[in-house]
Image (cartoon, rainbow, N blue to C red):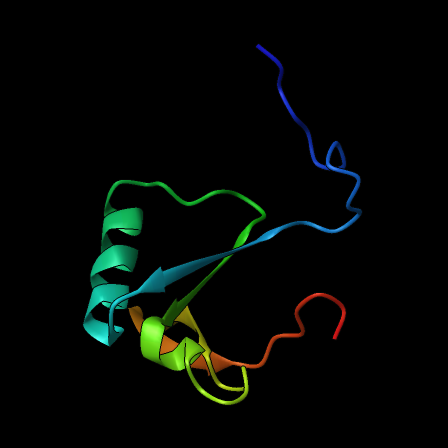
Length: 85
């Protein structure tokens, strides 16, 4: 068994994980399962999107992040530069 460490892939940055869900409700359910079952991966940013968001003409406003606001998680659209764009 080989254990891979950050940097083994040849990339210098920490990866980002983007989950594609069916809709906003599915994003919330998926995030809840991840948090409830303590499946977060330390140091890895977790983003969500949907099929319809990815079908837009541009990728602007297609990603969502769950942020903790006053003790509750809320969905927040984010602007993220992908692939060095």
